[in-house]
Length: 505
Image 1 (tube, rainbow, N blue to C red):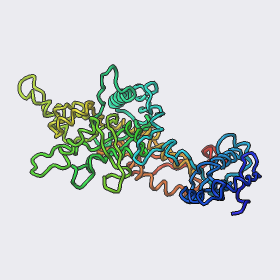
Image 2: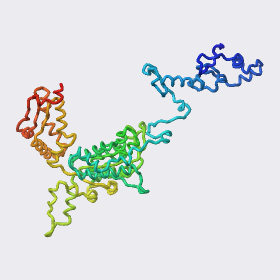
Image 3: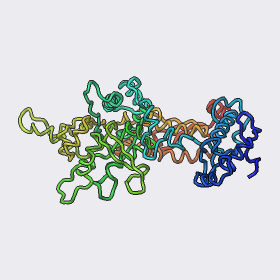
Image 4: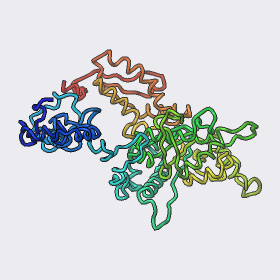
């Protein structure tokens, strides 16, 4: 090795200075003596290592930082590198002074030296658990008690999207408000507040799912909607009970903290009723109710990440369901007969007796449901006890269906009007036409779900023909068109009918 290799790297002067002859001789020959004893001792010592950048030996610059096998860098060169990067705007600071275009310097990455030596901040692992650095400085809670929306404002927001169902909206607003107060405070004077899980009854198409979906969107919390029909006892074909929590974790973007403050809506809960007069094992009825008890009350549940079932190839995480709000809903067919039988049980004879058909015309008979009726239907007492808030939605009549067509922010006729507006055509519905659509929906007994299918049927030809003719400016849907006694009224485009978009063009 030549003397040129032994040049000392000065951080202040990049040209370097020559090392003295004595130092070179000492590094080359050992301690500077030429005796045979000294050479024998040097053979037993650790071999000298040289800095990859300045070529100084470790006997002068100190222990080297191992960057790769057989390659080390001294602390002075490493510091010099970091200082140079800072001056050019690489490592933070005032990047406005930098003339370096980072986009033209590919394959540049920076090391966290603290991680090389087992120090520095850690990141969130695959299981979603916090790290030491995150534990030192926890993020602010997602829900602040001072920012929780009060019940009357929750109901006002629901009124903008959901027509009618005033009692159901009031019950849900109060229950959600109390639940998230409980989440924000935990305990009040060492008094633990129980969860406000809800059981919602109502005929199909009455807005049960839409209420929950609108509520979750308003509160900006994760929502998971699942059907109870696919749930089975562990070990049988179907979804395990923990799969409902897996869906909520996926809705929260695999964020455990956010998932533990979400809402789970389990629809078709009436399908879990105990089967009567059966000799087979009830793997999708009472056994599922019993398995859901721990979820409703609050427990640590191990769920897979990114999958609906656990296996050896899927990572898992632990979710605590203590602060997850459960809302169960179902149509509960034949529940009205159970309620009528209970109401008519006490009077069948005498002058003060009620007629047995007294409640036959009561469309909202489900609102008189009690816990005894639910037990008679097939729900076990332990399951009912963990759903303390029980209420029913109203049966929709013709006037409510017309309001559903017209009033909400995203009403159905507003959606079709927006579609035709993109074609620069104005769409209108006569009041008689809306009532005719409502009557057809009542005949189908599908509730609000039947409205869109009916309108889609009559709008098909209109949506098909309008793009053909640029002269069409307005379409008016009439009652005769809905009753199939005539056609819609079509007006030719005039200067006053041209929408703003067409006028701008």
